[in-house]
Length: 247
Image 1 (cartoon, rainbow, N blue to C red):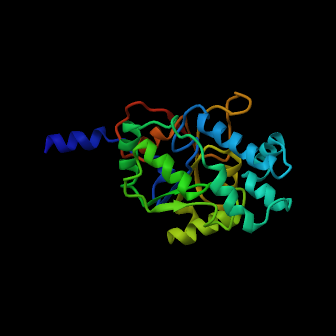
Image 2: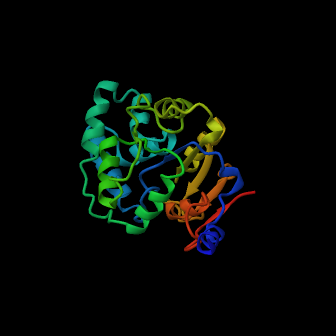
């Protein structure tokens, strides 16, 4: 009896504002995994090569991504691509080398605990097959995820759009935005989710382009990596803490 009592005492409590979570959504690139943007750079290069065939420079393609949340959404808005061309875009630009994503046993342990808190989805503005390949490389694809929600499922919208969060909730069968927890590395995505009423966790401390420290007032918690999520939710020992909750 003492053993069980001690174990309970050692178990960290969830941050009060994250109690009552019924659905968890975790971004894929540079959130579920981090590798110094090595894979992100490969995707950016691949997108630049593809958009060059459309008469769009790699710099403009990256700017479209920054403005619209995905380059694809920007191409659609500017009518450089139509929906018929979107599928080829998604297929071609994700034909990349995934060798910089490595198995992460600690991440698997963390996610195993997190997936016991509430049903979890990978929520990506990319393509589901790309996310599945990333998950397989990490060694977390076999965990009991509820599925992958990708840009196709969100009508090719990015996570800058309210409709993407509405689609994610519809797919997940969620009805209360305040019971949905969202983890992402993008400040703009976090801001959009917060405006929609979701609970938010910003992941990553450094801006990809400037190297400056990332800050986001709308984030209710800020983690250096997703490895801190289990502790934040009170389902892991306080070992290797890397996150802070905002009061």
